[in-house]
Length: 120
Length: 111
Image (tube, rainbow over all chains, first blue to last red; front, side):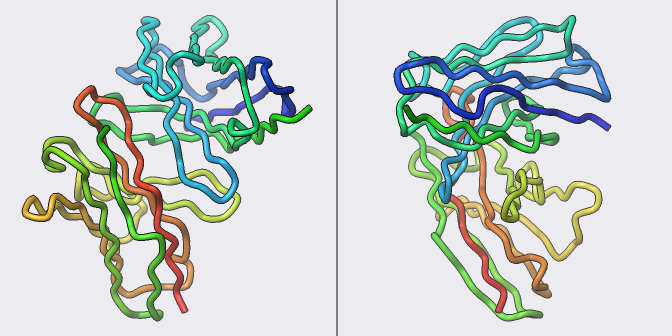
């Protein structure tokens, strides 16, 4: 059973960089033709896809966030990471990592989510 | 930009049938698969329908999905409603660049 767990600071100051890591257990991040995605959800609002990475390092980003987002992967640690720069209060949300079947595929495994608050 | 539009909320009584729509803003919604996710408060979403009308194992056959090309919409239908079905439901598909797009979500109340 694949499990994902987000980790990182719960509080980030405005204009700084939000950094989160997703640790995958129960299977290798490199096995199968899967992508690994980040998705966020502000309180009381809907889901927003941030971007995805393939284990080759190939990435796709939501055009609305592309200028501020970097997603990377460390296959040796079975982890992938999110960096979001120049954050504002609008970036306050629960951040989820998820296994992504890629174009046409589904998000079949999700982390529990981690709340990141942007505040001074 | 491709968008998916869902009703903000729907409500129905236990035992009844409810349908949640998801309308594509442009192009043909049939061009890419549509998935449906259920999200209960405080929990991560889970898949209830994938590839337009397929149910993951463990999802009861009370849940079904369909595509209507004439209205450029996908629909999630839940029959024999149970109080446990009360949740937020999100449709999801892809735009022309194969980027992920979520609908705004529909709050289902079973009362």
